[in-house]
Amino acid sequence: MADAAPRLHALVQQLLGAPFPLRIRAWDGSQAGPPDAPALVVRHRRAIRRLLFKPGELGLARAWVAGDLDVEGDLYTALGLLSGHIWDRGEDARTLAGALRDPDVRAAVRGLLRLAGPPLPPAPPPEEVRRTTHLHTRRTDRRAISHHYDVGNDFYEIVLGPSMVYSCAYWPDPGAGLEEAQHDKLELVCRKLALAPGQRLLDVGCGWGSMAIHAAREHGVGVVGITLSQEQAAYARKRVADAGLTDRVEIRVQDYRDVTDGPYDAISSIGMAEHVGADTYLEYAGVLHALLKPGGRLLNHQIARRPRREESSYEIDEFIDAYVFPDGELAPLGSTVTQLERAGFEVRDVESIREHYALTLRHWVARLEADWHRAVRLTGAGRARVWRLYMAASVLAFERHRIGVNQVLAVRTPPSGSSGLPLRSRTWN
Image (cartoon, rainbow, N blue to C red; front, top):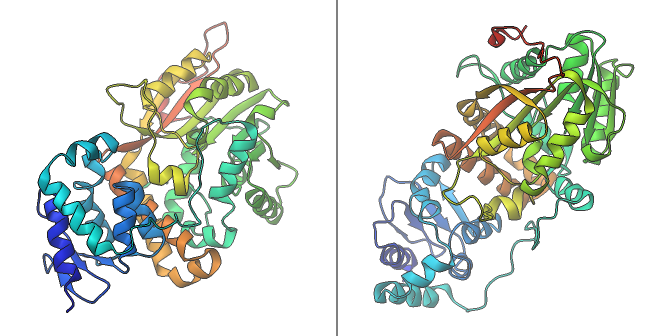
């Protein structure tokens, strides 16, 4: 008899102590739960074992990446309904230990163990990075960047589109196109930096060269772009050559700590500082400050998390850390501003563009889904599933203000105290 889904649905509700909002479709073809809700498709009973041996976000991620779990219906709706039962419940070891004191919870776990089959936990999917420390040395940073960015330029072309910009776009309105919004973001950065012909710009974490090309072509500056990704550098160099800008743009595979040819008139750091790490952030800010001329500007574009009550405790997002951005760390906006000021910068402007990132990610998810089979051929099913889950979950995180993204404009103010900014700096001229 096909009854796995009703049994699973009842046991999950018993475990949670609340109605489970999704329909469940099990490996035996059975279904249970709200008929109009998206379906959580449990393709194999080992998905239950993954969740029992690693409750919460990481267990779900392992089952998703391995293809043991899927969603039928709108992915955003499903993740939104799940978030109140999984991600927001703080399913850590202490919570689990406390929950197991409840006899109903223990009974539900026993029932799930029987339904799950053989008791041994499945091995994590091969896409998972295993690591125990966050060192942020040159070697570990290179390895982490390679894991995320050396997936294949063809794959990123599917997701990002012709702009090849892998950071938050700047939308004139929700109906605008992705290319227009990315162009407007690059132009906004250039205006905030007050770029002018003949100046030197350092683009830290230059990606596939989009900012460097835009700044050189539209504002006449000389640009040095640095990245730790060999694939990005090769792609960016070709784009620079195709644009006829090799006399103005140099792309290097180089750590920001190894740049010695300052001073620069301006520095852009767009979506790179998330990789720096809390323990080395002051060093990062100090290096950039030293590379700027007096009066030079830094535009630091960075994702931020909400502050915690206790900031001394180290905390990571298990799924992101294991599958997406190894060693990535998000800091509250206030911490970033403080570190920049400690390094000697004068922070002159902060602009939150949180809603813009949610729109950007929705476009990236749509592009990935529209060319799904090619993406799988290029990078493998597991890796493609990582990116789809990561980007869709990030949409909800930005929309619900769990995380944000900010552009911080800072100046290496000279001893004279003249920042060089206009009295009404929001005009960006």
